[in-house]
Image 1 (cartoon, rainbow, N blue to C red):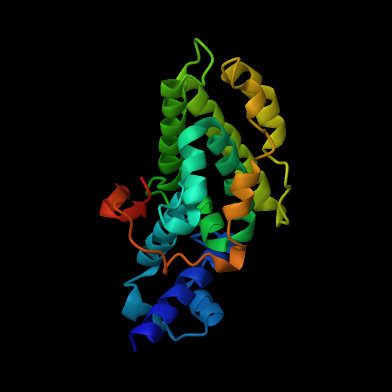
Image 2: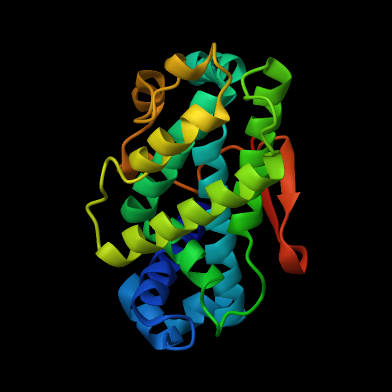
Length: 247
């Protein structure tokens, strides 16, 4: 029974994400979501009190996906990537920007989460962009401590620039209906990395993304936001919602 309830909840979140993506929050109805999910409205209201609560669940699930994309998995099968992240924070920043753009096209829940952030009818504040900015800032700070940043680099300015560029690319990719461009972020990194990186590090950062990142990234169908273990670090979202992130 619990497995069936979990499956229904997952179907409703997935279906709501697809309907929100097509019609926006205001243009979506409970009936459309239920029809796509293949469940009754009674089943929906068993899990979610209204469309707003369902939208919050979509946004929280998208934030969990974002956390998984942008932080190395602490489990044994990804130890290589965790080590890679520890020793090369700037390369990890490049890698996860590519991963983010790819996943926006591949995952309707992530796409809808970012879509709600731009939806005037939603109006509850963005959950995903603060998480992304914090991750960018953390990696840049680690790079500074490591000595990988060029002298005089202003971390606040770089965070703002990376966020603005990924927001623009995310919006373009979200509206293109996929498949994503494998090199969507590459021109930006080719332009920025020479000014961002210290001289001894410059030639070691690949603007197209590293082989380590590609080796550990699972195929899109293997990403299941409801099956992931709860991690130790959590970020609090607006309205008291919590999304769990790998620290």
